[in-house]
Structure formats: structure tokens, C-alpha cells
Image 1 (spheres, one colour):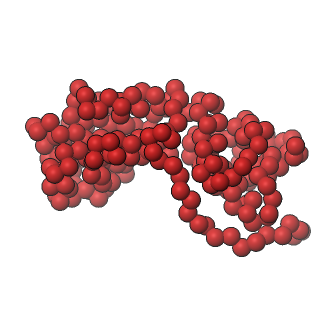
Image 2 (spheres, helix red, strand yellow):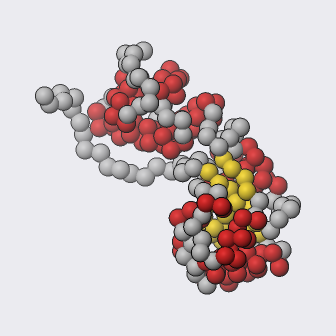
Image 3 (cartoon, helix red, strand yellow):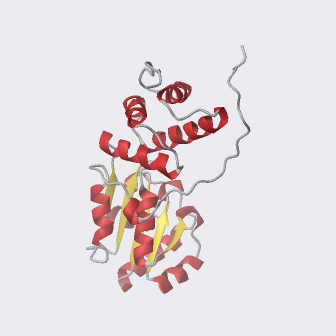
Amino acid sequence: MTDPTPRQLTFDLPHRPALGAEDFLVGASNETALAMIDSWPHWPHFAAIVEGAAQSGKTHLANVWRYRSGAETCDAVDLTEADVGRFSRAKTFVVENLDQGVGDERTLFHMLNLAREHKLSMLLTSAKSPGDLTVTLPDLRSRLRAIPLVSIGPPDDALLRAVLVKLFADRQLTVEPTVIAFVLARMERSIAAAETIVGELDSLSLATHRKVSRALAGDILARLGSPQDATDLSDS
């Protein structure tokens, strides 16, 4: 049976999520990591690692610190010898996504030594703790395990509600509080799930010319395999 609801062709145009310090949403799960960022340049160590699940806010925090410190940045898998010079000039450096592999382990070890010897600062991010990383160079493995670690935990309901509101606002979508409550009660408890749900709702709303409602949210939650029963879908 065909869907009678008319749909229009939509384009996956990029939206502009807010990444400034004032837009970082604080909850019990991330307040320790944010406090560490805020304490720079008075860190007790030359480096720090922020660990957390995908889309937990690690990159947002790294960007906050980068703007404050003037840091250069690079994904760990893309590190090369040229980054040593960038670090020497900037005095601060962000290395993202250690869990995805380190392109040049000797370069990262050299940069960590440089930071320690010349009182420079490094911020590293990872979806895994240092002890669980795949690192073949013993000296680097030991050095990473010695760096202070702060973790971003799973978000609580208050933080998830705020994240949903922000994500809808980033896409310029006006959504009733009852829709937010409906989604919150039925979604997977993660920032990544909130990103997916809001993106899917935005696309379906555009394609069907329907407002973002509980009924539309129920359709998306059912499609994504909501962990809770997406019933009571009537609009209000």
C-alpha cells in the first residue's frame, strides 16, 4: 500500500550548530570535564585527556579550549612530523580522537615530551580510556596512561532535554514542550541518539509538510527502533 502523504524533494543542507563556550550545556555528566577546561592555564600537568562516547561533547569542549588558548589542532590519525613545528609556534595543541589510531606515534611522543620540557599545553580527546587504546610504542603508551583523565558520562534527563531543545533551535525548528517530553521518555539515553532523532524529524517534517509533533516523533522513534513503546501518538 502506498503512502498517501505527499512528499517534496529535500536537500541535505548543512545547519550551523552553536559551538561557543556560552552554548555548552552543563550537567552532572560533563561538569568535571568543563571545570578542567575552565582551569587552564593553571593545569597541574602539561596535558589532559577528555574521554567520552561519540557525540558526548568532547569536540565542543576541545573547541572551547582551542578558542581560549589559540591552540592548533589535528586528528590523531593525521599527525605528522610537521605538527611538531605547529605546536612549537602555538604553544598549545589539541589532538582529537586517539581511539581512531595515531598516525605517527613517535611524533605524538615527541610532542608530549616537548610539552613537558617547555611548559606547553596539550588537550587530547578519545572515546576510550588510555589503557584501552591500541598503541604499539611502549613509551607513548606509558606516557598517555600518566596523563590526567576526565570522563564525560551518560547524560541525565535534564541534560538530554536541554540538548533536544538546543538541537531543534540550531535547525530553527519550533517544537512544543509536550513533543520534547514525548521524545525524552522514549529515546535512547545518549547525545548521539538526540542528534539522530532531531535530524530525522527535521527531514521528515520538510518532506511531508507536517509540523514536528508527537505523531511525527512517534514515526521516527518507531523507525529507529525506540527502546520504549512509542504509543499514544495523537497530536495535541
